[in-house]
Image (cartoon, helix red, strand yellow):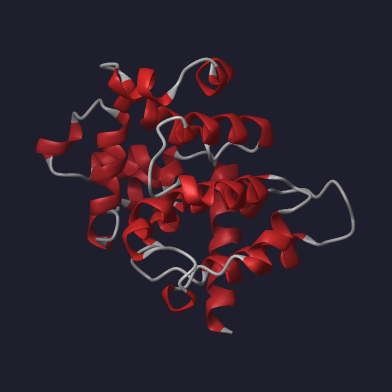
Length: 212
């Protein structure tokens, strides 16, 4: 499916079709998959739209996906506003893309090679993402809390509970997720225990890194 849209359509064909915007949303969701080939195809699908905020960073995004080059790219790609490597009007759209791309590398549980430990890998990624502003990093917290989406949705106002559009629901949760009073702790037990443990370990690591 991704190969078809990554290779078989020009951006004009995709963007002018009535389902273009919906597909763009789905392509973006595939960026957080752990398989680098899927990430690459999803990125290429998005690039078919020739977005002004993404196209200039095509090579850098591909290098962040590639396991062989992502560490070097993190070293050379500075995300802070002061470094001016990202145009100010591109940041709002580009930040979620970059965070999605590195997300699977941040949450990986096992290393295929012993050259780098999980801790050092995660520390490098957190340091890299630290170039984003607090507001831009809200999206990272959104991904971190995504397994709790169902529990969180039950705590939303009734007017927002029956949203079926995935992208819209993500937007609503991202908006509401910053309000701790909406988290219903009695619903947490519905989340798989393995995901709960993974969430606590990653959250602990993030807090430890932020304290340094």
